[in-house]
Image (cartoon, rainbow, N blue to C red; front, side, top):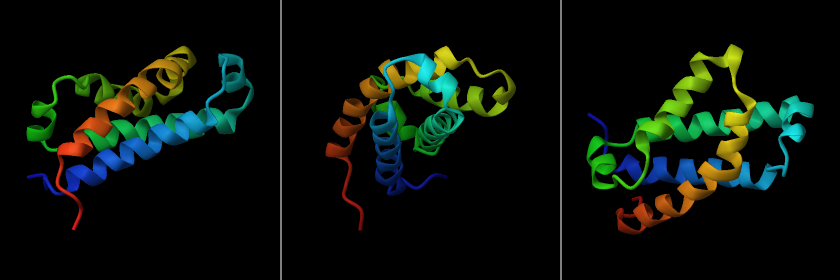
Length: 117
């Protein structure tokens, strides 16, 4: 059974990963094609978001259906298991659209979670 007390920490991990992505985001996909370090660092942060989401309690995920949990966890699965055929457009879409949209949803969840001890 997953520890509900760890939910806050997992959400914070997700927000940290989103902030990393935002800090290093580039305005066009060609920057990711040209810079393997940027590409791999970004992919790793997306993986962290999905892994942290997977480790949240089911109760928390069920209480927040506004968050596309299945897609968040699925993107991690796709990046890890299909590493040899990662669609860079998919990564770029996460950077430009999906990660920024996820952050305020996670912040709203933090507001209702108990603080860390």
